[in-house]
Image 1 (tube, one colour):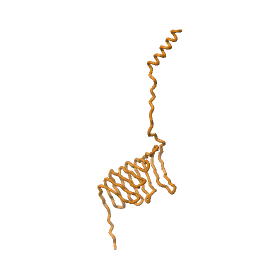
Image 2: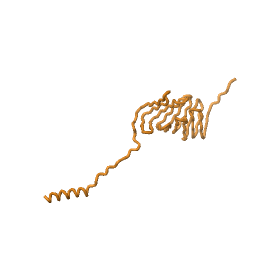
Image 3: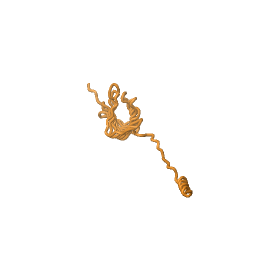
Image 4: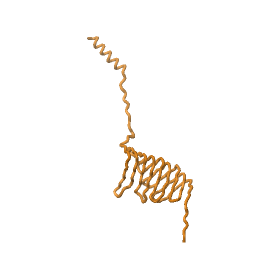
Length: 171
C-alpha cells in the first residue's frame, strides 16, 4: 500500500516538475473593423437636405473612419456640387483623403486630375501637392501644387503652366 502511494506521489511530483504550465498569449485588438460593405452607396443627410453621397466597391468601417476602394464621393452641401473619384479613399472626421488616379469635378465644368488629394468638408478646400492637371472649357493648367476652395472658387497653385483661350469682344 505504501508502495502504491509512493508511486502515485512520485508520478505527480514528476508531472509537476517536468511539465510547464500552458502559456496563453493574449492579444489586444486596437483597430478592429466594425463592419464591411461591398458595392455600396452611402447617403449623409441633415435636417434640410442630402449633404454627401459616397459610392464604392468595398469599404471597411472602423470606430473613427471608413476606408473605401474605388471611391466616388459627392459633396452636395455647398453652392456647387463637387464630385471626387479615386482608387482608394479614407473618410475620417471632416476630411476625405483620396489616393490613386484622383479626379475632382465640379458642376460648373472645373475638373482636375492628380495622384493624391485631401478634401476638407468644413472649409471646402481640396489640396494636392503631388502635381495636377486642371481643365475648364478649353483651358488647361498644370502645376506641382493646388489648393482649390469650392465656395470662393479661388485656386492657389505652384509651378504653373497654363494654356488658355482668350475671346475677343465684338462691338
